[in-house]
Length: 207
Image (cartoon, rainbow, N blue to C red; front, side, top):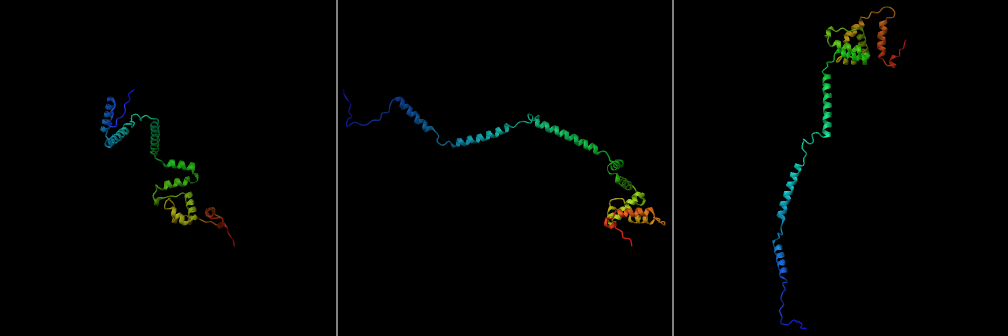
């Protein structure tokens, strides 16, 4: 058996391998040389396109008015609006009715009978000239009672209400005729005055 021995004068050589391996290595080297190692401009362009596409997508997913026209929520709101409109129309129709003196008198007699005549008299006096005013006996007694409560309060009320003047009240008291003995109208005047006094003020001392 003959053995190959390395000679001292031999020169090392590189073994390239088979022909197929040499072609593959050339292809791999060529591919690595063609790769772009700085792709940042392409990435920026890609981001810009993606942002534009998202804006386009937001505008396209908005539901149209035609599709939301008959939703349960909108139907309920329309029904509520129609109900409120009918109520408003009813209120406007009722307000067009003019309130008459008869309506006021009926209301006062039903709810406030104690002052119904006073209110009725006030409505009548607003139509009469001040110099031609005529007061009933009952109204004069009421005016005297208010005056006994306090002259300042009576003066204040005359700015709003139709009440006899102070001179008219004095003339009423001057016309009282007194006869010997007890007079009913004097007791009536005393009763009106006493009704306006407090408990302590009603105490009388006879000497």
